Structure formats: C-alpha cells, structure tokens
Length: 208
Length: 254
Image (cartoon, rainbow over all chains, first blue to last red; front, side):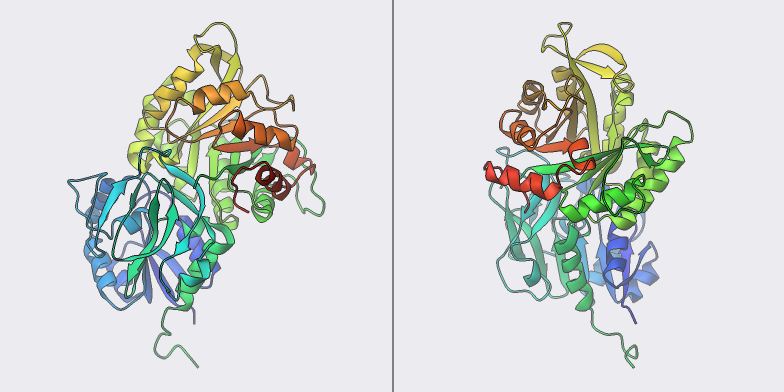
C-alpha cells in the first residue's frame, strides 16, 4: 500500500505541484487542511511560496501551525519546501514581527546584494554530510526561486552557491527541508521526492 | 553560481498552439501541454505559455490548460495573456502555474502587480513588456500594449524599473522590432533594462540561430533566453542550444 502523505493546504499559492509530484513517485498524497489527516498521515509536507510573514500568518489563520509542529515533533517524515523550509526556522528578516516555527535552529536572511534577487534559476547542490534521502542529489541541479535563505545553520545538509553558500537542504531526525522546489526540478527533483517517499516507514499491517 | 535559463515559448489560441510545430512522432502537434512536455524532456529550464485568445471564453480554457500542464510538467511554467487581476492570477496559480505574466493590464493599472505580489509573492509576477525602437521616449524604446498594436508613449526602461520596484519579480522583454525577423534579439534593448533592474530579465524576440542566444546573454546581459520558432520547427533541440551556450562559456544546466 502506498504511504499516505498529507500536503498541508493553508491557502497559499501553488500547492498542487507538490501533490502531483508526490503522486508521481508513488505516494498516496493529498492536499489537506484537516488537522486529523495531518496527525494520521504517514508523512507530512509543508509547502510554501511568497512572503514568509504572509505564509506564517496564513498557517496560523488556518489553525494548522500546531498540526505542523506536532507532525515535525513526531517520528514521521516531514518535508518543508521553499518558504515551507524557511518557516521551520526561528525567524526571517523578511518578516521580523512574525516568528517561525522554530523546529530548526537559525535565521532566514536576505540574499546578498551582490546577486540578483530573487535567485530564480537552476543551481547544483553540494552535500555537506551523508543523508539517506539527500545523497542521491549530490551535484544535481535544482530549481530555486527565493530572495531570502538560511545562510548558516547547524542543521545544514547541502548547500548551493549564490553570492556565497546558501543552505539548500537542512534537517534533523525526521525533519527535512529544501530551499529549492523538488516538485519543479525535473528528474532529480522527483528523485529526491522518491527517496523521501521510499524512506517512509512501512505502515503496520500494510505489508502482506 | 549564476546560470542562464533557456525557455521555449508556446503561443496558444483557444487552447491550441498557433504557429506550426514540426516534431516528428508527436501525437498532437497542436496540444500545448504535449509540446511543453517534449521540451521538458529535452532539458528546457522553464516553459512559457502565452495565451493570445481574444475571446471571452479564454479564461476557462487557459485555466484548464494550466491544470493539465501541472500534471505533465515537473519544471516551472508561466502563463501569460489576459491576466488582469488577483483573481485571474489566483485561478492559474491554484491549478499549478508557477508564475503569471501581466502585460497590458499592468500598464493600464500598475498597482495590479503589487496586488498579485502581496497575495502570492513577487516571484510569481512576471511583467511582460513589448518594446519598440522610436524617438518618442528618452531611452529610445517605447512600450506597446494590446499585443503590440498600441503605442503608449511610455519609456520602456522607466516602465521596467517602475514595475520591478512595485511587485514584478521578473521581466519578460520582447523586442517588437526583432520579433519574427530571426535576426537576433535587440541586445541594446535587453542590456538597457537588464542593467537597470534588480530582478531577472528574459530576452525575447528575434532568435534565428543558436548564436543569437549566446549574444542575448553576453551582449544583452539577459538572465534567461526565450525562443519559439527555432525549437518549434525542429531546427534545434533545447539540448543543442545548451551545448552551444556552454561552448561559449555560459553556465547552463546540463
């Protein structure tokens, strides 16, 4: 049986792509704004695009911040994408008044003014440390769209270079977060999602 | 590192590709989604759909196309044409488009850019500018609207700066002098805007050879290069274009 993946739907931008890409790699993925579904899914994905403060606000207004925090604190695989990654950190320079979820240590900073903002391009990622899901994309090109990023964190797993090192993947324990959009990064992006889905522990009783 | 994107563009009328497309072994050469998937497989970095439908049923057809594109494409895609409001943008983004292109509506009411950006972020707002050489404006480049039919008297460089400081996260810049000529981009136009805005600029209009793509980056300082006919007519694949650019020393995704 395919693992269930709850893609948290809090009314922000293009969430459909993440759902479609997860389905493509074999997950039983669906957009949901139900805390119960988020609490019971085998894995949880927090997407996000646009403004950090607006995303945090929308997550709170949809009453889903607690559900996201609980999922990240569980042992179930959890993936944050783009602003969904940024929201897992403590705060962002983009919206200083709106704290992040604080699941991962560090701050989200404005990209340096020596480069065009947003970074809107493909960029190869470089692994800093071995990780079962991330290993397969070391050196692969991924699609980035962002003006803010985590530049330094103890939770860094992979970086890309854009006016200096930018954290491309971060995580700890069950939590993984990508600054790029795996659902928009063609074959290697789908490869990362496939690895994420394949590492979802088999649900009790689902195996013959 | 900075890399340059190659973006095939499909003109779509009532849900069908206009301008002939000459791929072998394609089931339906008029289906924009199938063609876009072909470009995805060739290594296109993004795809742009420009809806040129002049009728009122445009919106539903285009939203439906975007929905299908989101099921088939796993690279970013932009839908432009007929986007006039936050609601128009919402419909397209909601079904899976990554960005919306706004042209005439933004010239008529610049605030629409900031309104869409406030709702969804400026990374999904592309201001599409059609510019033509002339002596009516300070830079020598004038903005045209309504599919290039109506001169506005607005300076193209001024407009690009205004639009990108008020909500647009990217500029799709089409030279009307170059469009259809296959004589190359207007690199002076591209550079005069790329050098003066802080966001990425896509060069468009006039590509006839792979060298033109190189010139658009080296002389025009474009962050991305758009082409239609050289890909549609099967003269070159996206892969060949990338190999040619890499040979010229431009960083592209392999």
